Length: 204
Ligand SMILES: CC(C)(COP(=O)(O)OP(=O)(O)OC[C@H]1O[C@@H](n2cnc3c(N)ncnc32)[C@H](O)[C@@H]1OP(=O)(O)O)[C@@H](O)C(=O)NCCC(=O)NCCS
Image (cartoon, rainbow, N blue to C red; front, side, top):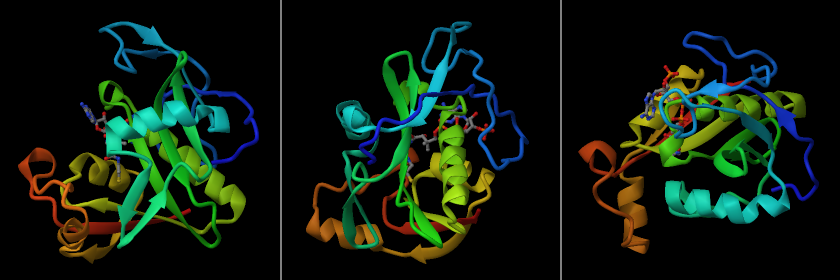
């Protein structure tokens, strides 16, 4: 994660079904109805800006709840996804979503994308993804890749709707990881056995 204080950038989560991703994330800084776990009809303003060092405690709390912590294991390796640059989505002073990436060329990894449970389904994940894609293009990254698991249907849906293609199947990778880390559950989301890793990739 970058240690410089990022410029605060206002945006609105205004993507609609069928919008195409442009060079820059869409948004005009306006309010969003019913997003961020607000009550029905409530309007909240969501701000996306680069994560900075002071955001680490809030980011850790979000990742602890959403993805079991900042240390993520994938493809047989563990890495600290908060040791990378990224973006946070804020509803007031609450961090409600974040994405980090490896900022490499020509291929970079989307290391984590997480939205707080009460705030999903309102476009926050998609907007954060587009912020990373825009940052990648600016950086000279040609492809963005990521790893997800066979049970993560919400993520598979989101990524494929945002132009990612399935490029690798690592059958049994989670079963192998469980041998070192028995705390990895056998049952995944939606009653699906948690077994495999999938690599997805998007050309930027
Ligand atoms: C995957 C994840 C980041 C998606 O974030 P999100 O903010 O819900 O994503 P979006 O709202 O942009 O997109 C979700 C889609 O499902 C729809 N949706 C509707 N209700 C939903 C709900 N209750 N939950 C999730 N999605 C819902 C959204 O409208 C959207 O559809 P669209 O593409 O037609 O607009 C989020 O579910 C999450 O944090 N999961 C846990 C962590 C995780 O698994 N991260 C990915 C690791 S690879």
